[in-house]
Image 1: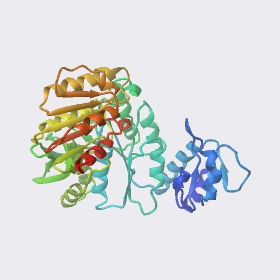
Image 2: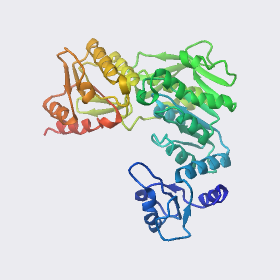
Image 3: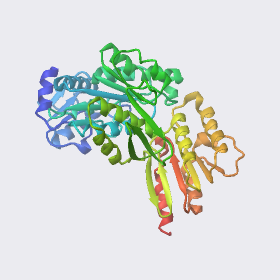
Image 4: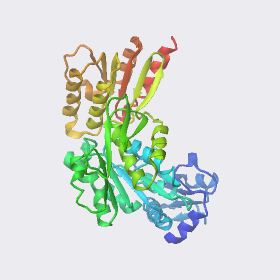
Length: 433
């Protein structure tokens, strides 16, 4: 079956699905394969649950006209999404970077939808499967698309660009993330810059943080729109670090948010920049940013009794960890406590990067420090207020033994540490049991 015919089946369907547990009637089921699963085994189940067709690359069931046999299901999904993207022919903004991708995407989405029917990546579906699914979630009513792109190896952003064919692009920053895959910070810069390289090759538009020395190097490209405190920026921003919540000044207007952390001010500035480029009023931008409520453990404040917990536990790397700690240190709150979990995918740099964080913790004013994970457990410290635990079970016992009152608590660690479980422990304590 050629891609044009498959696309027509898609237009006539109720969308695509890759998981039979969530499939809906008349969807196209794509039988993806991975290291530990084979979607072809579930194709029959997908049809029995109402799928219109099952796209397979292994004939494991009796012949059926509702099976569409292709050479490679993943490539077919990607090719279909690219064909659909070209069919819709709407502007696509791609966002990548080491930190802040999802928050920036959500802020830009909030701003753009004040004027345009906008579709954005759901959650962090930002890989070789998530990007096609995002594109296929757009329809003829969509006027603008925002596609988040993640990567942990070279050439992955390049491939995602070939799938999504963005017209606009923004890189949040270049930090020490996924060093195991990228090899070094230079590898990170090279890999993330694949977005800008694609756009320059295809005469696209670059959104640049002109205050970032690395991004400044892209400014010679003619199709740039910049923001920052520099007087040379197209959108001149003034960052205000006096508030506990992130806010910025733009054209004598204070743009306030419900986001904690001064590092989020840059994410807000990027949203202002994109909104300004697309002629969205400052009043609409202001309302959009103020109305965005962080969730999913990203810079999210949770109140439990007399305590306030800053949940920033969706992910962590040395750059984001340091930024979170710097912002936390600057907060005027008393009784500040940090609970940090291991940072993953750092390769041979892991020991050094974890020790660097511990060295920083020893220099700042904190009431208590709890570290959990095999990497943090190996670090060295003479600080009496610092406690280390090799696993979550040990940390749980320690937290249950503490009486936290009137405390401001930062919780941050890599996704695999699942530190959101700490909320259940603190809720249990607050209930009085």
